[in-house]
Amino acid sequence: YDDRDGFIWLDGKLVPWREANVHILTHALHYASSVFEGQRAYGGEIFALDQHSRRLVKSAEILGFELPWSVEEINQACRDTLAANNLSDAYVRPVAWRGSEQMGVSAQRTRPHMAIAAWDWGAYFGAAAEKGLRLDIAPWRRPAPYTAPVQAKAAGLYMIATMSKHAAEARGYNDALMFDWRGQVAEATGANAFFVKDGVLHTPTPDCFLDGITRRTVIGLAKRRGIEVIERAIWPEELESFEQFFVTGSAAEVTPVREAGPWSFEIGDLTRQLQKDYADHVRGRLA
Ligand code: PMP
Image (cartoon, rainbow, N blue to C red; front, side, top):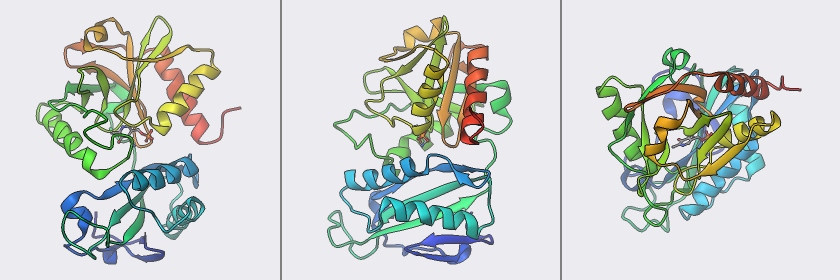
């Protein structure tokens, strides 16, 4: 991804893509003192931009560093990055981290840095999204809230996501379904999980993983249609009884799942309806 034309916003300036570099002794590279966001622009407008910028600031705060940019400045920087790259439908990736001003676990004297990149990124799961995803069961579990800053979108939390996704891909699956430290159903490696049974939506309570912006949007869209949504603990034993399964995320949008470990699901009307509602909503086409 580093060798291409375009501009990246780095610490307040738009710099040529190939020159947006950091030093090897960047604290974040050694100690994962990094937080990020991921959002999509549709027709030139970044969906839920303010919520994403707020979450970035909050994630940094949870990790103990304060960004010298306001939410409004971050919003504007995202829009500037999109414009500088002549993009209208795109994925936007802000990232903030502790710099190379100090080495060691203690990082009190490091400075916070921020960059924003944007590029054209089609369907997150590619063609597999159409037929429904096949998910493996992840070998790693989402950690307990007292063992990691689970409400931050922090780079360090993605170590087990990448390892789980690689293990799934090695076995021919599209992604992995992660359970949490208690053994309850949690989420996919980069998207939240929803299940359908008798016309009702069931989704795990987000107490050890991100309460995704797409997740909350889809809950709103479902309620708008009069669909009941139940947030609760979901155990793997129950997966057999669900008729439909889909995942949600800014990159993944609403993607149906047809298989998770030994369990299979249909791609039903309710999933298709919410998929369409979400696509319309992000483009401002929902009445
Ligand atoms: N869980 C994880 C682990 C994620 O990486 C993401 C993507 N940010 C989500 C859930 C969904 O969050 P959102 O809808 O805010 O993109």
